[in-house]
Length: 263
Ligand SMILES: NC(=O)c1ccc[n+]([C@@H]2O[C@H](COP(=O)([O-])OP(=O)(O)OC[C@H]3O[C@@H](n4cnc5c(N)ncnc54)[C@H](O)[C@@H]3O)[C@@H](O)[C@H]2O)c1
Image 1: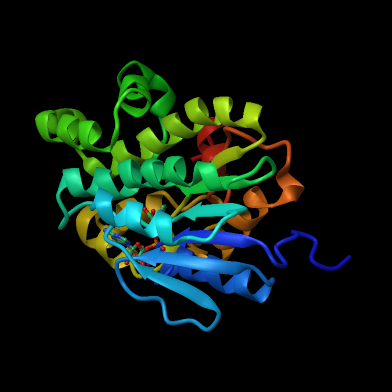
Image 2: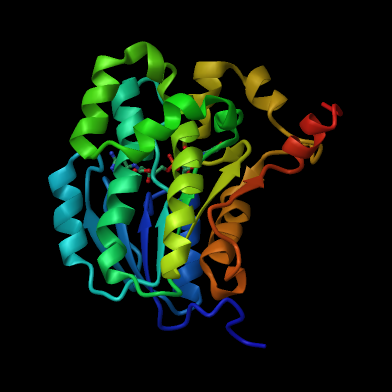
């Protein structure tokens, strides 16, 4: 069976496409025959890719990029992210959650039933289900500017910005994905474990190598960017047509081991 994921001739939008998981997803999509529009603060120099240089902290820049994307859009991969320090908590939440949400919401008019979007959250967002009282109003009742303003006004609530951004993504995917599936559009996310990408040295500096290693599951190793990219392609493909409002833990068994007390 050829083209089992069905990306040949499809239009995909990928954020964070210049590096790490986003670059890996872009490479796979191009190999599979998709037309890729890449959004990143850095240019993406890959043959066959439309590169739009966008700072995701800038709502107007996102809106201009959305205008430049030819529809229909079949698959959105929201992968871009900031690791927290040295970036501020507000910038981190803006790129990791507020911009991801705004981009996907803005692309919806170009997405037909059968299309899908996936966000990259993180195992750092584990425990979001216990914080729904705060998270649901934030993810469901704010627009771009309102969400940024709330973050600026509530520095303690969003500290540390990286964890808060990933909890917000999980909560939004569960909440919003529930409504979107009724229109035939699927929204999901992944929660990766430690992955060897250019972001990793920053995590090691911030948290210490021991803490990062503690998040390595029973597989005993970090994942590669490609091992994170394939599940993203799978979730956005027609092969996952009954998977919606879901978080897939791509963590080498970490969550299973933790849940059953084996870590
Ligand atoms: N590496 C890990 O261990 C790990 C683990 C869990 C989740 N994640 C998440 O995976 C996603 C991909 O990260 P990665 O590990 O591939 O890191 P990476 O640093 O290699 O890639 C991040 C990409 O986001 C882009 N980006 C950053 N700020 C931007 C902005 N303001 N506007 C537009 N683009 C911007 C960068 O230019 C870069 O291309 C992120 O959301 C990250 O939080 C990473």
